Image (cartoon, rainbow over all chains, first blue to last red):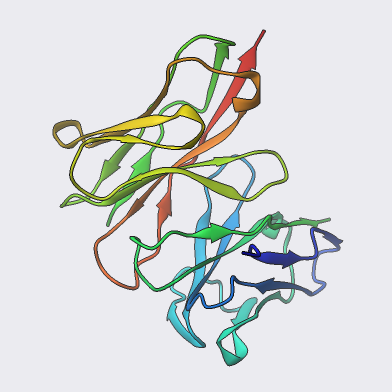
Length: 115
Length: 114
């Protein structure tokens, strides 16, 4: 089966600019996750979708980050305006359903550098 | 709230030597436990997982992990390390509640010397 697709792979922007990341999960996977991985740290959950509804966005900086999952398939994560501390790898993952007992499949991530 | 601690930031092991990466978790009950590996520029790949039953679990690439309830630990082991095992390893915890996502440790970077 095809994996989780993410684009772009790399992005360099200046602070205060906006950026968007795209994720296409595995077909049939109901749950989609966006994680932020800062250099030297483990992935931190930003937002979790179940189909096209938000399950958990408690750690999403909502003043600058937004995410949507239209039609319960693809998802986009947007940052506007970006700050230097947003430099990180943004990982998208999907699972068959919403439970830790379902395996997560991760994409290769988008590496964002804010200068 | 649950948490995961990986005490070792960086470990260097000689090729052919054994490996043990430590993971401790904090949670009121037995969680789901996972080990993932991340090679440079890649996403996370699942090595193994523990849900219940036999406390010694086997994974891919010759890795195994042992769940010890009394120590709240889930250490990853490999009897003989290969140079291709050099990567970053993450321990993760999942609670037995629908809708709760995995929580990851900060990771341990493994270097393999020849």
